[in-house]
Amino acid sequence: MAHNLCDWAERKNPSSFSEEVSTSHTDRLPNHKELYQFLVACQQASLEKGCTQIASISVEIPTVDPLAVLQIIGGTQKFQFYLEKRSENEAILAVDATIYTELKGVNRFQHAKTVIYNYLKDTWIWTEGKKNISFAGPHFFCFFTFFPLSKDSQFSSATIFLPRWQVACRKNRYTLVANVKVDPQVNLKLLLKEIYNQIAEIKGSENQPRFLTSINYSQLINSNSINAESFKSAVVSALKSIQANQFRKIVLANAIDIFSHQPFNVVNSLDNLRQRHPDCYIFSASNGKGQNFLGASPERLISIRERLLITDALAGSAPRGMTAAEDADFGERLLGSEKEQREHQFVLDFITQRLSELGLIPQCLPAPQLLKLSNIQHLWTPIQAQLLTNVHPLDIVAQLHPTPAVAGVPTQIVQEQIRRYETFDRSLYAAPLGWIDYQGNCEFIVGIRSALIDNNPLSATQDNTYRARLYAGAGIVAGSEPDKELAEIQLKLQALLKALL
Image (cartoon, rainbow, N blue to C red; front, side):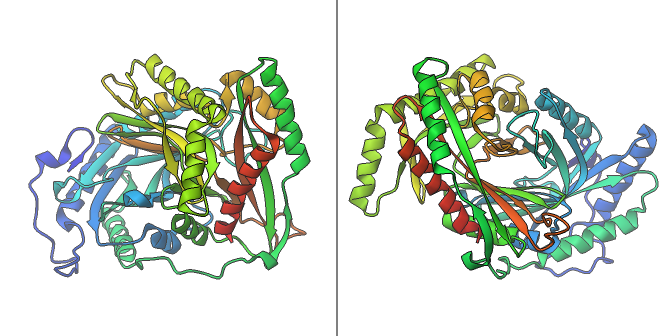
């Protein structure tokens, strides 16, 4: 269907495929005549309203691997976003920005909501054959830094962009969305030709990315490892503050830098991550300036589909066992641990309270389950709520970020303490990243188990030196042991390092 929230397509009769577009009977391009009429209507609206309109065009395409598409049409100087949950057979890729906004300040979530609303007022939507296609229509991709005012981040406090090209799959159905600007001066025939050419290139992409030469350990110039004594000292100091009732939980993160003579290959790293961590969200966000933030996060912040909200309380960790018996034993100890249960309860109570403050009625199971990942297992409680009121997804994101799973309790106090203990800027680490579509559906994850890849040379004197900064954190509560918390962080960092190289 097509509409500017005024259902343009309902006023048009479908036309047959134009003969001037060369297609095969098995792999046809979109209806040329109908699509051209749609663009004419957009251009007329632009003339009448005196401002540029956005045309969002959605078509079904044959099977493609979004990572292979990223390899073909991506580039270091383009905004990009990638999110995949392999166990659910779902992925979405956004490349290049038709429009984008970067925001700063403490009111970034509210301002981002206004930005999306204003863009949608001038957006027209066309879906091939008026089908009900997954991931059709405009999707706004958003990433936020952990702190609203970051001191040393390559990313703005909030970034919102509508991609030029979007490729997504859900349950083996594949959708391509093109978002283009239309104003009175644009040549519609040339614009249509450009759209067709890009669709044809994307359709012709391979079903999996070409694996390029990987970086191996011997090629690393240097790596700044964890300062173990410094981290354990911070844990001891935090435990004293907890004992003095200054706060009840704090998440302390660590970052290590690794350096290479070769640029890091983002597509390779994402492919490695999805192979190694099929139960996690594999993600990547690029600022269009050569920096990519990527990782494998087990933590969903919120998901909304057809007004059903799902979120997760995820806190409390244990390693996986080498045998089934050992693994079960670790899991049972995790479920029976008073310390781990207390850490988990902080997160659960926080989320349910914050959702209730928005007028929602959260529902969850009475006891946590085990979420078993490839190298670690967590206490996990999924939470659901029906959206009966007009609550915007970003209102919920603002209400939940940061959860005690990545900050602590109480939120305001521990954020100040995090800045005291950590010697690096968190940037996008442990922050919300995701998308919102024009119907209010969304998916946001928490950017943990992650790395910031900078494929710009470090300096003019180090033109062949590139850096990756790896992040991992651990929740500190009463009963935490410095050696065990250090081991947990090292486990998380090692898994990420293997995927990057």
